[in-house]
Image (cartoon, rainbow, N blue to C red; front, side):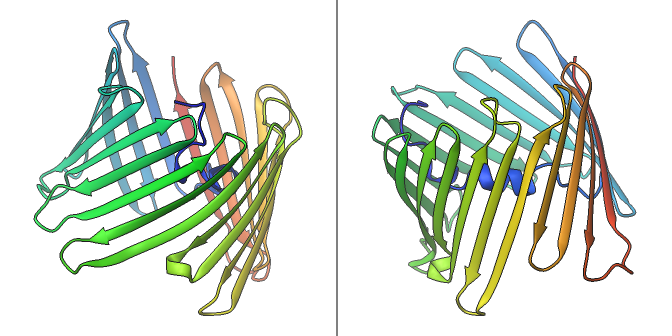
Amino acid sequence: MSKGPGLFSDIGKKAKDLLTKDYITDQKFSVSTYSDTGVAITSTAVKKGGLSAGDVVTQYKYNNTVLDVKFDTESNISTTLTVTDIIPSTKAIASFKLPDYNSGKLEVQYYHYHGTFTTAAALNQSPVVDISATIGTPTIAFGAEAGYETTSGKFSKYTAGVSVNQPDSCASIILGDKGDSIRASYVYNFDQLKKSSAVGEITRRFSTNENTFTVGGSYAVDNLTLVKTKLNNHGKLGAVLQHELIPKSVLTISSEFDTKALDKTPRFGLALALKP
């Protein structure tokens, strides 16, 4: 499935991950355990502001099927069932959340050497149908997505994008928000493991004539420590320090502050993930 152009959601994902992933502003602690029978259990506690929450996620893998069940402290039960290759080169994902009986969703993904296609529909009386497609190769891909509201008969969204991937770099342009915004990004990797990278992204919203330019990157200090930073033209500066305490167990420290308002208190985040 990985030999084609990838899903539409993959366009611009590398830049987005570099600029957003691990930039947390809360406190999070998680512990994972695994069994030889294919069962994984992850317990997570999160404190955000003055509120605390927690959840337990159980994952079971068997052949081409993965079942995820999540219980949280708000008495919600979320279930996701993923089945690969029911039909060759396809993946089906069914999800629902209790007690919200209208939260069901079914998604089907189809992969081809020169294109991918996905369709997703909510399982309720007035479903929204999302469709996306890409054509191309692993090097260059063109794609589009749209959301259609069956009740009103109108498009809720439509987006188009293009990406160019090289072994050491990746560039993408996405026209989104029904044509109201355009986002261009570029990622350059300094090593083959892609741990040290630089990224630049510019976004323009036509309705407000607002431009946002963000630069950032990641740097592998050693095999156990990673540093990430980002800065945009509005003066928002963020930094992340990740350190692998023991194999697969990672401590993440994040901070963010406004360089144009140094009197404001910076925001900090802390996460500890323990895995066997």
